[in-house]
Image (cartoon, rainbow, N blue to C red):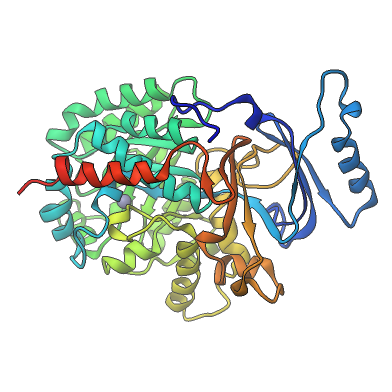
Length: 457
Ligand SMILES: [Zn+2]
C-alpha cells in the first residue's frame, strides 16, 4: 500500500524506473519492438530499441547513477520479459458513478431506460454516493489499464475527489439538462473547477446533455461559459433514431446541424455516439475538428444502432472509444470495447479490412489524447511524453503463439492481463492490485451505499 489516506502518493513512486526488455507498442508508428523504457518525474525519458546498439548504450547510461550527476540514484529496474508496454487507454465517454446502477435496469430502449429508471434513480443520489460510485468505476478502469477517463455527470466535484484518491487522469464534465438541473449547473461547474485547480491530472469542460434535452439558449450559455474559462464542450450527439426524429420535428434539421448552429462546435468538442449521422453531419464534424466518442457496446445493448465509424475515419474525423456508463454496457472494460469497435465496424461496413487492430489501438490511445488537446504528449510511448503507461502480461494461453502482439491487443487480450499501470509516472496498479485504495473495503462501501441510500421503495 503506497498511497496515503488523503489519496496522495509518496515520492518513491515518482522515482526513476526502468522497464527492461519488454515488447513496446509505441503507437507513434505502426508495429512494435523489443526494448526498454525509462520513466522519471512523470515523464518518459528513455525509449530504447534493443536491436540498436546506440539505444543499448543509452539504457546502460540510464542505469548508471554516476551518469546522472551528484545526488542521483540508480533507477528501480523491472524485468519486462513476457510483458508488453503501451500507452494507458483513454476512455472518452463514460458516466463513472453509474457503476452504482450496474445490472439494475437492463433490456430497455434508451428513452424508457432514461425516463423510467435512470433519471428517477439519479435524482436520489447525493454527492457522497457519486464519490463512492466513481471510486468503484475508477478502480475497475485502472485495474483494466484505463489511465484517462472523460466523465460526464453532475456533482463532478465529487468525481474529482475519487479521481484524486485513485490517481486516475480525468476530464470532468459537469452535465446539465433543461429545467431543474440547469439551475445547479453553474455552481457545479465552479465547484468542479475549484476541485481540479492545481491538480495536474484533472481538467474540466461543461457538458450539455444532448440536443433533445437542451434548448439552444442553454447550449449557448454553456458555450459562453466554456469560452470564458477557455474550455471545450462534451455532449451526446445523434445516439438514436428517436433523437434524430425529435430534432427534425422541432427544428427541421439534424442534431449535428442544430448543435453547430447553437455554436457548440465553435469550441473544442467531443461528441459521444454519432450513431445516426448523415454525410453532411460527418462533414460538419470533420471541418469543426469535433472528436467522436464511439461506444459500440452501449449502442448495441440499447439497440441504438451502429455508428458509421469506418466512414467517419475515412473522412478524417478523430474517432475515439468510450464505454459509456456501466449501466448500459455493463462494464468499463476498454479491451472489450476495442474488440467490439473493430468487429461491429467490420460488420457495419460489410468489409473485414476496415478498422484493423492497429487503427483501433490508436483510437483507444493517441486519438483519445487528441480529444483532450494532448496530442503528441499523451497516448504514446515516446521520449518527453507523459508517463501514462500500462504493462500487460502476455504469458497466458490466449496470447500464444506470439505472432502479432498488436492484433492480440484487440482480438485476444483481456482486461485481467493488465499487470502494472502508471499515471503521470505514479504506479497506481502494481502486480494487478490498486496501490491507492483497498478494493475489498470499496466493494463493501458500494454495496452499503446502494442498499441504504440509493434504493427507495
Ligand atoms: Zn453517455
